[in-house]
Image (cartoon, one colour):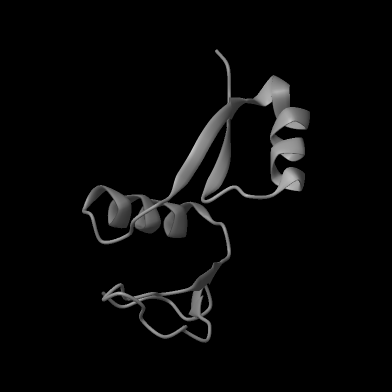
Length: 81
């Protein structure tokens, strides 16, 4: 898959560990790039590690969880309808 270098730029890649290949990217968020990333997740080409989801109204709790450390993965804020 070819990526626009101005939108998705590879950084230095750490060595593979336990047969796990690692790719690190910095992302400029625009609609086209977010669509590309969403398709990569849906197709199984990009794996996400989500530690937990927290309602947006509890953003301060999510921040406290991050400050406490020990979280493996992202903490996602979810909107409420």
